[in-house]
Length: 181
Image (tube, rainbow, N blue to C red):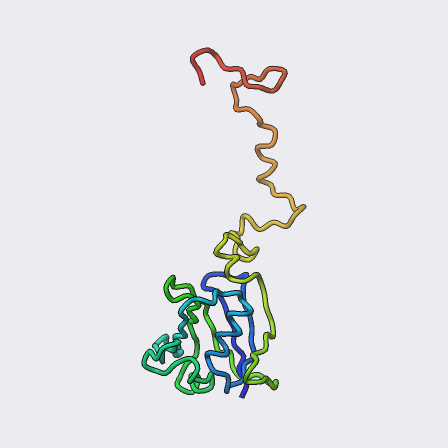
């Protein structure tokens, strides 16, 4: 059985990755693929938190046994059969950095259990969003303009270089009365 998984960031429309993953793939193998593709740091503790459709916690899987097994013991299929509908994958547990993984269903392809397949992607890696990158889709509506598009607001104040009542000399510098600044 091959599952389709969608990786997203909370509140960010400009990022996603879609993977096709063999059900026999361990969560550890999935972790290694995500870490490699998304350039997550290698020296951090990781954890998968599995949740059901209602948001209840099905299990927590990490490098150490957190009660439901370790990531190298648990396959994706085992986690899904236990009721997992979504995962929160903490790629840096200490700093609570995570991505969301939604199990979208079964895929009609053959994929090795050792190599999850990246089927679709959008946007830069998550570290870019931490550094201030904002995707076009995430901009407020009033700021969504493509280069070359003109906005009516740009022309409203264009001819008013100086405030009313202020004078300028021939060099374009403002002239102030004594005592005013």
